[in-house]
Image (cartoon, rainbow, N blue to C red):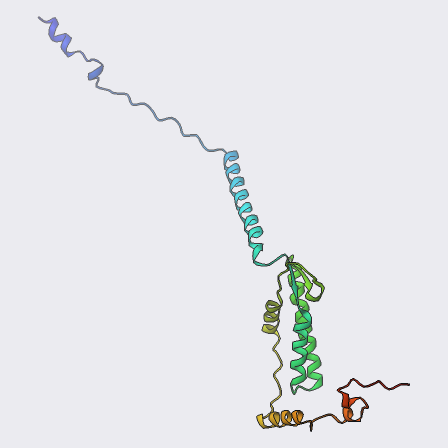
Length: 188
């Protein structure tokens, strides 16, 4: 009987007093090469997004456009002619206006846009940017204001012109003036 209690008190694998726990595997450090590769992939992705944005974003501004320079310049010259600005100031303002038109077109050219003079475009589907150029130029150079004339003076001048009293003296002296300017030219 003494053998039986000894067998029951022996420690078996289920009843071990000291249980050994497995040690965690040592942590390996991420090397410099994988970090550099991930960084290069991120940089390539950002560069690709930037290129895509610039290529697709170029749709806002057409690659080739036309502008009616004669219309813009003519409009400005007529406004200057109607203003009561002294001649030396007209010269300065006109130079500033023409310089701003030139700068505007140079900026467009530097950004890669080809700008054609509207009169040179015979046919085709070329977008007209005249209104946009006009708005940008007049934002920097103000349009001359017409000279102040009272309504009575304007109406009087219009009535005189309509009744024929306002005909210029030089036109009356010309031989073809009675024919509306269709007379023969003087012969030398």
